[in-house]
Amino acid sequence: MWARRLAPGVLVAALSCAAVAAQDLPPGGGADALRSRCLGCHGPDVIRQQRLSRDGWSRELDKMAGWGAVIDTTDREPLLAYLAVEFGITPRQHVSAAADGAATAILTTRCTGCHGLDLVEQQRLDAAGWRRELEKMIGWGAVLTTSDTEALLGHLARQYPARR
Image 1 (cartoon, rainbow, N blue to C red):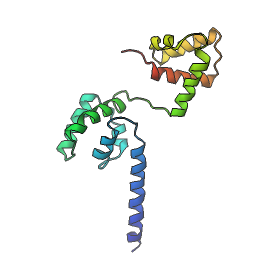
Image 2: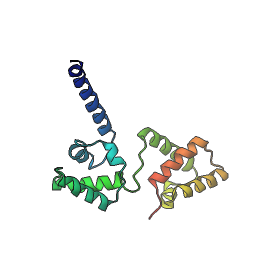
Image 3: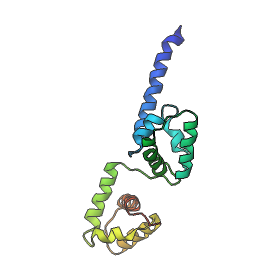
Image 4: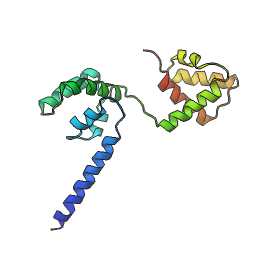
């Protein structure tokens, strides 16, 4: 008897958790297709932990279609591109708009007083290279706190990554 009363509550809680997890996906062109085509059978954690190449995700989509997943031809390419970028071998790192805005403000107020953004955009360094560059700028008189430096480092590495 008590199980009948408990079951609807458990179902609502489970669906609520799945809905919250589905909203936690990175934005992108294939996010809606991922929600509608994939998350009905398993949660986003299964997808997040895969870290597959584009070819790997293509094989995974083929496998899921073989198991009954319906992936329209119009959904496949955006979904594949989204999976490869957001959950690829080296997944994209996301930061909040507020944190990114703070780092942009630091860049604008502390860096562009001495040089233009064009110089920053041309650098294209990895995280270690950006750290060396920031340390050099501090040595030349840039006023950056430790937290400013870390925020700026993450921002620069994301916005102006090393060319491959």
